[in-house]
Structure formats: C-alpha cells, structure tokens
Length: 303
Image 1 (cartoon, rainbow, N blue to C red):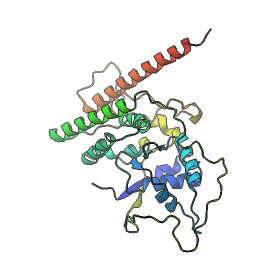
Image 2: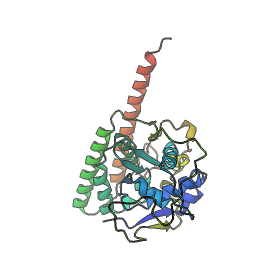
Image 3: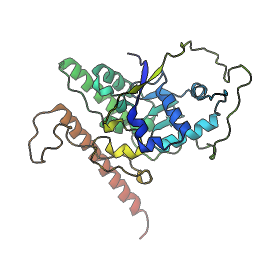
Image 4: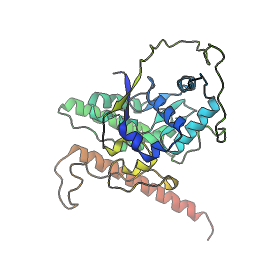
C-alpha cells in the first residue's frame, strides 16, 4: 500500500537532542519524512532538487546544494539520517520503529521486502541494527506468520552480507561541505522556478501530508542520539554523543512482557522472546568479532 502521510510524534519536539538542533536541520528532517518516495524501510532515493524546493523560505530563497550537504552531514553525525551518494540512497534511521510498521503485518512485509533491495553497504550496516530492534508481531494466521519469518530471514541475510566489513563510524557523505555559518542561499529570479524539471512529476499539491501523532510515551519514538540507548529499554542510561563511536547497543534477550521475570524463571514458549534471543546472540557474536579485531590491531603496535 502506498504511503499517503508521515507521522510526526509530539515526543519528537520534547526530545532534547532533536529540539536542540539547527532549525533548518529539523525542517529538512521533516521534508525527508514527507517524501512520497520514502518506503516503509525508511529509505528513499536522493532527490536534492525536490528537497531544496521544499526548503524555500517566504522570499523564495532556495538553499544551495552545498548547504544541503552541510545539513545532511550534520544529521548523519547525530544519526538521524544516513546518505550514500554512491548508490543514491537516503535513510531516515528510526523510521520503521517510529512509524510503527511492525504493528501492521502487511506494512511490515512491505518494509522487509524493501530491506532486501537496499544497495548501499553503509545503509545495510545501519539497517541490520535497526532490524534487530524490531519486535515481530504475533499473528493468528500461520501463513502470514510464515511469510513474515521468510521475509525477515531474507532481509537479514541480505543486509548482513552486504554490510560485512562495513562498520561505523562512516566517513562523511559530502566531505566538501561548507564551514559554518552557512552561506546565504540564492534568490529565485522573478517568477521562474529555481530548478526547471524536464520530466514533471504531476503530483497534486498537498498529495503528501505530515500527520502529527497523538501523545505517546513509547521510547522507540525518540529519534535523537541521546535516546539511542533507550530504544528498547527505557531504564537504560542514554549514551552521550561524544562516546557513541559504537552505537550497536546490547538488545534485551526477552520481550517486554517477560523482561522483568527473574533470570532463573523458565519463560513459556514465546515468539517475540525467540526473536529477542536471536538478536542478542547476533549482538554477542558481533561484540566478539570486534574484540578480536581490536586485539589484532593492538598486537601490531610495539610495547
């Protein structure tokens, strides 16, 4: 099913990390959420001209492409948006969780199919971690459950294979960005459009709207870096941006319903718990690989 609107939760604007960003960065984030090309995995093709036109001010001034690069670099450093100019893909990192795609089986299947078609190793690395944090829904239909399990497995295999050896921190996508403060944008001459489009897309005005969500206290709806450690467990202490060189936080090993049970209590058969256990096992394997790589790198230095 095609997207017709984007959700902008009230909690976004009370999140300290999001609220303290440059106002232009926040507006660009909303512009990216409101693009019709954004799929349910949070990925969309780069369309700099469309984004620039959406960022015009009251005088018709359009931000330059270099200014847009600066904003995208800045948002990537804070882990809101990731861009791969080589494949022309852009990712809104927390979209799958904040949009609640896992709550609707058919929407979830669309997201999983989209994940299996990501071309960027960089985005695949980020999305593999995001997929670990999704809670697969409990569905009554065995066929739907089997479909979701198969799509989830295919998406995970694709992402992990594509992202092999590609880990954060990533180099900035636009290293030629301007130093701050941003240079003044250029003015639209007269009544002409700033970027003539050879292939008009014919979208009716207002075809995409941004829906402001009703109050929610779900920590997964927080989009800021400070909230990264809270995505799955609100009792975890958020990490500071300066120390977030490895954002691969430890996922819980049980679902929210059974998470507070003592460790020695046997949990009854539970599909969500099984997903969390598998995610935790994958996380443990990644940590072991990183520790081994660190030991190898340290062994190359003389004492």
